[in-house]
Image (cartoon, rainbow, N blue to C red; front, side, top):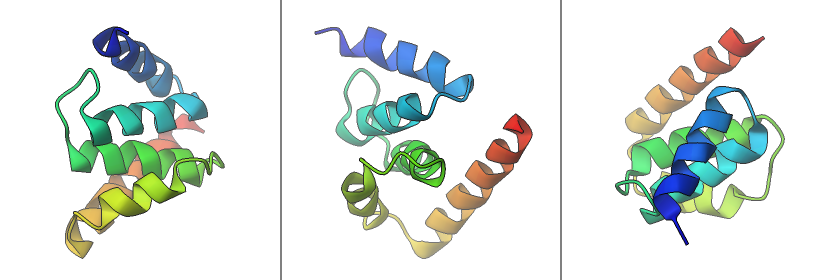
Length: 88
C-alpha cells in the first residue's frame, strides 16, 4: 500500500471539503501513515470530520486529544471552525 500517495489524495480531497477525507487524513496524521506523525494535525482533521457529521473517528479523536493540552485543543478547534466558515 502506498500510504504517502493516499495521504496526498486525502489532503487534496479534504481541501475541497470532502468529509470522509477529513477523517482519513486525520487517521494518517495520528498513525504516521504516509505523513510524519503529528497529533495537532490529526486532531485538526479529525475535529473537522466530526463537526461535519462523520462520527466514525470519534474514539481516535479522543485518543489524540488526550495527548494535547487544553490550550492546544482550543487553538486547533478555533482554526478548524474558521476554516469551516470559509467553506460556506
